[in-house]
Length: 176
Image 1 (tube, rainbow, N blue to C red):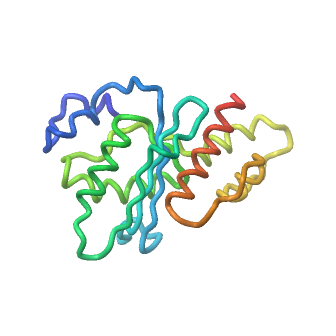
Image 2 (image 1 turned 90 degrees about the vertical axis):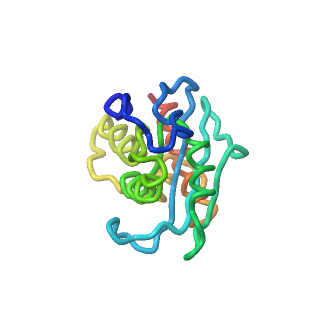
């Protein structure tokens, strides 16, 4: 997607780093909370992102923000954009998450997020297709955590979901 957007001008030059080549080797797990599951009407209520480097989750390198009605989202979105940079985005139900984030950041930067995306439920599904007789899979996040023998989520908030997606991503990358 970045190649398709390369050459475009961002409405805010301060965010040009989003269109540069990714060379850190890192990824960023993201998750959000919303007012509903309808992507066209849902409002962003919370957002979390945590960096992944190598086989480690960098829990100290994260953003966790809550959005309240009437409160300007730009400061938190600015921190979020600087944390994710041009790194690939990792998550569960990622199209929904990125769709909500795009609606919030596009007025700031002029384009949707250009980052590569890695959906952990798809990674899990593809990894299990290689196992004979394992065709019916439960793709709920908690079921994937259990099947991969990973710890349960610490809560049901955006940060816990981002950490869970990061754990799934790392486990599946280790199996490759």
